[in-house]
Length: 219
Image 1 (cartoon, rainbow, N blue to C red):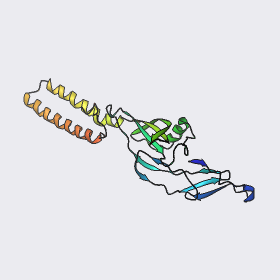
Image 2: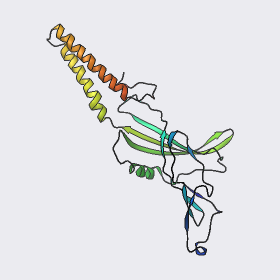
Image 3: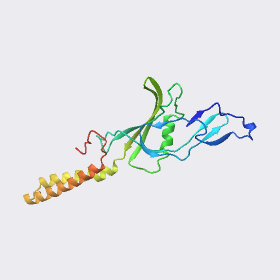
Image 4: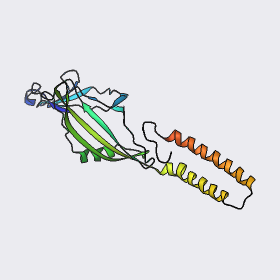
């Protein structure tokens, strides 16, 4: 966060050429913001800010938060999700408090990708920023929304679910139309049904439950 305070300025030549100092956050006014989609998280312990001699304030605090996100898993495991991270402050109207992003989405996209140290289930594909004003009780408030696009890596689900399922059904057809006796076919069918049931249980545990439409693979 960066903001200006014209009442906190000084001439460095009058103070041993000190052009910046570090102060606790509660020393001066700081922007009161929060994340709308936040469920829980860890509050940072770095409650300090850098004050420049020209009245420029800078505060860098790391947040680790859990957000709510509406998932559409119809194409699971080949789905792409979009989640919003909205920063807002409903204490000051837009006439007193306006939030602006300093960097472009391309710059933030490049920086964000550098923070991914491991290859997890999701691949970060795109980031866009929306700055707008929301009206509440005839008052406008400044909001900034980061739209995060993610693509699921399907390799693990293909190996553990799709390929075994296809193999079971191919084996089912081979046994059904093969020259085996009826008793052997029934035994094979029972084994295939048990295997399909186990795959269904694995699939049910793997699927997210925050979607109204079930995935095609589940159907």
